[in-house]
Image (cartoon, rainbow, N blue to C red; front, side, top):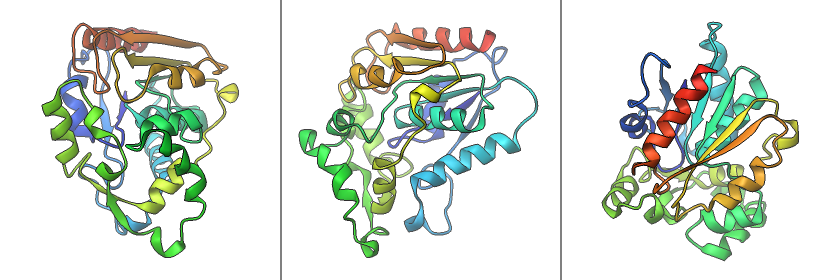
Length: 250
């Protein structure tokens, strides 16, 4: 199983949850995406969302050993896991806490700090001057990290963590993410399970379900009871672990 973080976290932030998965069910690996965690980029200002996709595709190829593989993605890492699975056909299943299509107007409106004004993010990114693309800004300027968790202290910690929510990302990366065309769900042939936090104040389940219901492969929705966007609450945390362990046994 490979763990894939989102825009407000990094691999180490996922370990307290993922360590609850029985080692008898899955061997876990995690990757820090460029700009996050411990990964060092030669030119951070040049990192784009497509680099994230390419890096993970290359990682799956390099780690190929014949065993079945599950990709577990959190937040925007959910769609990243989906995309890598679709492109490589290496994974046997995708588990995602969200399936956020940044090109969708409703999705953009809930992802950013600006609410309905977030819908401007897509069209305006096409007008981004080349010289501005490398300018790095804090993720806290863009993402509504205050909604990361139902626990206010955890949300504050994530927003201040320089390895995660406190990272600075180039405008070009944000533009490349907002305009990225993910593989259409009608072309997805890898089973997808959406494990969505039931009390997510950041990304309503409807925006993810809109994508999930169009997936051509077997698709399933599991609601994580009492959980916020960062799913740490019970009984939803147990729902998550049990779902993941069930899928690894298939």
